[in-house]
Image (cartoon, rainbow, N blue to C red; front, side, top):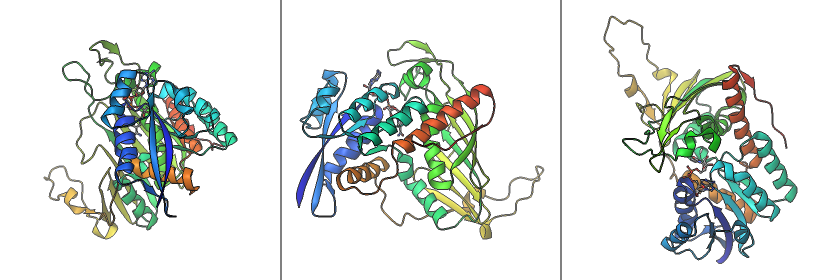
Length: 383
Ligand SMILES: NC(=O)c1ccc[n+]([C@@H]2O[C@H](COP(=O)([O-])OP(=O)(O)OC[C@H]3O[C@@H](n4cnc5c(N)ncnc54)[C@H](O)[C@@H]3O)[C@@H](O)[C@H]2O)c1
């Protein structure tokens, strides 16, 4: 077996997503498993080149994991002789200029979502990457979660018959930061810093709906800032200027209606932090991050509405679990492996910057729909 080292410039690794999901659970996990076998006797060995704003923090992180390459200069990182890929998990606002630089330096691009702050900017990045001939990808991790893979298995197997509707519930209580610290960074609640529920979650709903159910034809969104004042990491009170909840209705191809509630001001009465119920003529399913339960039409009860009587059936116990039937790895890592193979061996890869731009488009249209109070069509995007 020969080992091929591939340098990955990783920007934003001191952040929540960059550190835990991308560095530790993906790139370092791939190294811990001995690299990534390419199938031709070659093993790909990702070599992180960490880049961050604070020398102290980035050096400490590199030391903690025994990593040799780190810098506070993006130019220096991109000029590193091993660097082939640029990965971005910075705050959304810092992303576009960094990716432009990396494309100009001829690096392949992999990035967190949203890929940019506007659809024009997202499309421009896709165009630039294509013109430069660099491979590119956007994180669409939810597609690789066990629960949603099981849902996709049901769709592909024809379980639902004709799909009628999707209802999604996403959210949990994010503490205000006063008597208990908030479990999400404060920029998420400031529109001027790229925060907001729609910008954060509509990119996910775009690829989940299109990738598993059907393409989105129109969007109607209603937003709210339920908690108008929060306390930041330094204990300072600030005004929440972004939406902390979004109530969306999406029309999908084939006449399917999807509605998804997303909120950071809701208490969880669900099995998982996100759940999607899909109803079809032949059966229904409820998918979360890990599990997916289903009910076939033959096992569907016939409840009769009568508020005078107590409920006699245990509806939740009438569902069956979709079995694993395979081992599921971390979704971020699975997508990283597909992207690394795409770069190193030219294998197929569908989740590129154009796909990422569709997520930004849905977020932008969602925000406009909420501001104007009307339903908007989602036009096809082309480079
Ligand atoms: N795929 C997912 O499920 C998912 C989940 C959460 C966040 N995200 C995305 O990941 C990105 C990072 O989110 P996060 O929650 O890890 O944020 P975070 O605040 O924890 O991390 C942000 C990172 O960006 C760096 N940074 C660069 N320039 C900055 C600036 N001007 N101000 C502040 N920080 C700056 C920080 O040092 C840090 O490393 C966002 O684009 C977000 O949309 C994706």
